[in-house]
Image 1 (cartoon, rainbow, N blue to C red):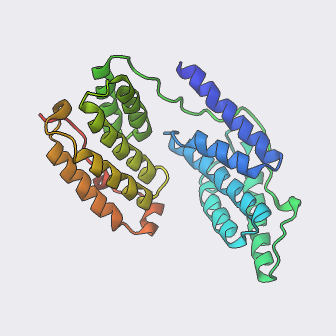
Image 2: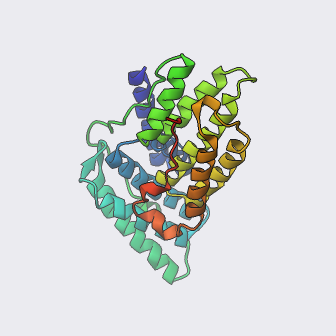
Length: 269
């Protein structure tokens, strides 16, 4: 199952590549964003984010004439591209990197003369020079047994595999009858895991804070002791993190985010 999932991700990556080369930058951006969401490998993620930034910039400038936003995206892309080798993911990144710098310079020139049309020659090319990226397979569900699923979600969360945790808990929730009180608890846990994915992968404190607020509404309605949880302590910790994230400066999202922003999710001893 993991091999099939990985092949699906490789196929999706290649569809994005075809869309980019065809000038369908929004389609490429959308496809690669989906591919990157649950990629745990740091180098792969940096690679995907770099080409996503460039693709988004090309869409903005070519379709919406948003030059300033495109300049910012290309600058962010170059920070990531400079940390990657000249060939990565089967692509000629050296040429892509140089072309991105040239495109950035041209966008700045267009801004200086109040023009908006970027010529095709300034779109950075993505040339294939080898095998495609080795993307980490999505985690397959560990079991159909409810208790095993629930614990596997806890284990994934503890390992900071937040996307996997939310997927596993969602599968658990769907398998439980509507009358099972743990369903409400798990809704809250899913929102917390999604918030952490948003914070640590998308670097979005505001998005994470909104999700944690929804999680708190859910968790406060959960009876004490549900599924072995001290729900009062859980609510207190999620509330603490929610308050901290709300005060987190947006600029901080560009660098490492401290582990204290991760609520503790574990059963009572």
